Amino acid sequence: MDDDPALIKLLSLRLEANGFDVDTAANGREALARLGEVQPQVLVTDLRMDEMDGMALFEAVRQRHPGLPVIILTAHGTIPDAVEAAHKGVFGYLTKPFEARELLERIEQALQQSATPPPQPGAGDWCAGLLHQSAAMEELLEQAWRIARSDAAVFIRGESGTGKELLARAIHRASPRAEGPFVAINCAAIPEHLVEAELFGHRKGAFTGADRDRAGLFEAAHGGTLFLDEVGDLPAGTQAKLLRVLQEGEIRPVGASESRPVDVRILSASHVDLHQAVSTGRFREDLYYRLDVMTLELPPLRERREDIPLLAGRFLQEVRERSPECVARAFAPEAMEALLAAPWPGNVRQLRNVVEQTAALAVTPVISLALVQRALRGKVETIIPLAQAHAEFERDYLIRVLRMTRGNVTRAARLAGRNRTEFYKLLKRHRLEAARFRKPEPKE
Image 1 (tube, one colour):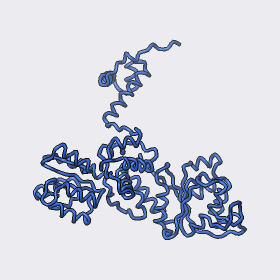
Image 2 (cartoon, helix red, strand yellow):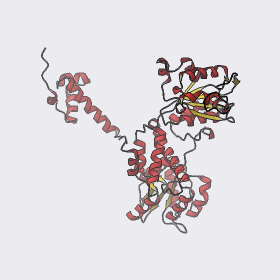
Image 3 (tube, rainbow, N blue to C red):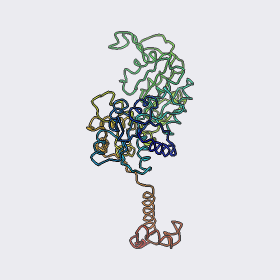
Image 4 (cartoon, one colour):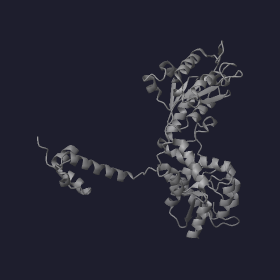
């Protein structure tokens, strides 16, 4: 917003020409009144305005909409002003006159880390916990929605930390069993001698410590969904009894003489490759096919990097809701770039941990690159420009060919599919001398 109608119109036309939906306000008070109606993802404001200036508007927005990035434009900016604005949490501070490209770049950066995700076609409350904007996740959730409507068993593949239980809960919410219970169990976390009692229940006196009858998790999930995480860690004896339950739809509590019917949909997951476990005899093949009727695979975070700004923004918002004393409100652009480039072996779980660490250590509203690097412990993957990557590959290729041919340019050019003139030009471009690689042929 701005109190100069001509500037508002000019900026609106430029932004709309670049595909943005624009809503304008004549002053700060009008903007505040309309924020609850339009719910923007980025706020761009002039600094000098009557009644309420840009910084006062920013302070009010920070209180009411803490996740909304604010970009301030000014014709009277100084370096100390910009530094102060950054420390307070202003996302961008541009001095007039500025290039349109510069403003567009700032808006794009702000959109990447806006805590308010863009509306997603077809998305609903059923998958609200799986924040995303990547094509990989969109395709996965479309599959999950279709699968959820049936009652088939689903096996969820995915690396540790990708959110397998979140996906299982989403499938339950999208299924006809949504009104029934959802029960999750980590099979690897239960002592082996107690697994059967946990799953199927037990009778009083069935074993030492069983001082009363107790229903198992199958009964607790009756009419709903049971999620068996780390199902590959089930003991062999329990695997056989689980297979019988899935085949017959009945359970027999430990120590009981009679079975009882149970109506449960099974979702499962495992860090163990069950197909390989079957081939080595560690997992029953017949049980495997009962559990793996339908398969969904969660992509690792490194394959859905476009989701990182949304996830980081949501996690930061959750930290602030839990801890009112937290001053962090956004990531500096270079800090977000570091998050986007990190390898993320721990996936979404690791990202949440990094956000919580940096938010706890931040002493200003903007989380710095240094804090992110500290939380990542230097595990940031460097992404070089494509042209540089191509040049490095070409140079490594030439060196390899020259070594193979012991510096013989004629043979090297033939292997590379180039004539001698072209090959010499490539060597000159990369400052390589064939003589360095010349060695006498080995004697027979």
